[in-house]
Structures are given as C-alpha cells and as structure tokens.
Image (cartoon, rainbow, N blue to C red; front, top):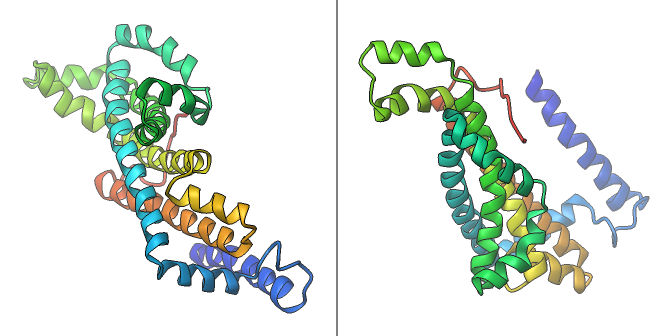
Length: 256
C-alpha cells in the first residue's frame, strides 16, 4: 500500500501538469513545458554524444570527489569519535569551516591549486568530507565502553583488533548513512560549480540552455541530474540495507 501511495504522489502531479500545460493551456508551455515534451527532449539528448559526454564528466567528478572526501571524512571522523583528544583538537576547526558554503570557497581553491578542474573536485570533496565526518564521529562516539571491555576480555588488546571488531562494526551504520548523503552532496556541489565555472558537465549544459532560453533542454538537464541523484541515493541505500539490515529505515543522521 505504501508503494501505491508513493506512486500516486509522483503520478498525480505529473498528470495534472501534463493536462494543464499540454491540453488545457492553463500553464504557459514556454515556461513550464509538459512532461511528455521534456521526456521526448531528454530521450533525444541522450542520443547525442556531446550530452552523454557532459553526463559522464559530471559522474566522474562526483565519484572522484565523493571517494576522496568520504575516505578522509571517515578516517578523521572515526578518530574524533574514538579519541576525545583528537576531537578536542579538530572539532572547533571543523565546526568553523562546515557552515561555509562550499561553492564560495571555489575562487580560493582555484587560487591555491591553480587548476579549475582540480579545484572543482576538491570543492565538492570538501562538502562530502564534512557530511561523512560528522556521521562517522557520531557513530564512533556512540559505541559504549562495555563493548570495548568485552572485546578486550576476549583478547582484542591491539588497536587493530579493536578497530576491526568494535569500532568499525559499531560505527558502520552511521558511516554508511554519511556516505550516502555525502555522495548526494558531492553531486549537488559538482553541478553547482559547473554552473559557475562552465566548460563541461551537466551544470555547464544547464547554463548554456538557460542563456539560450532553451527551456525544454533546461528541464531535460534537470531531469537527468535528478535521475543521477536518485540512482546514487537508492544504490547506496541498497548496499546499506545489505550490510546493516538491522539499521535500514532507522537512520539517525548527523549534520553538525
């Protein structure tokens, strides 16, 4: 029944939109094209090598930024959650940088790195880094001392064994939530930076469509961006459900 309601929540607005813009003319199709026209344009764009190249560039940038930011965010977050001294040293700095709009750091990152492409990926990676960091830190700090003591009583006296048998399993659910949110954050920042920096990618395509007032292409680009985001989100959610099935659907996500 839930799936039925979910399907209706998507289908009903689309039908109303199609009727209003494509049949009755209540909505100006030059501003809000009917869904059928957007789908047709999207299908046509996907046959063009240049558009597919833009999509692949955005995917590549998103994955590179997400992998780099998530890896570093997981390591630092686990260290902060596990060791109070590390948290005391790094938490104020992280809390000061996190509220900054990542895209606003782009000019500074370009100045420091000297490459727009590298700066784009690093800027997106920073956004991913902080999202993953807070979740990993919360996951590690939520591990109770009794679990550590039991592990030590059973021979897990080395740091490596405590990490493998206590820290990683105990923090994994929130780490996976952070990875999922971090990937979505990375995509958002990549597209936003592409809008500003231009060159290539879905963001650049959206900007060109806007400047040429090709509204249908603009909506088609947004549709593809949305599909990418949904694919990333549901793909990682499926992995999360397989790895930590007891935690799926009961997320405690940390932003700050």
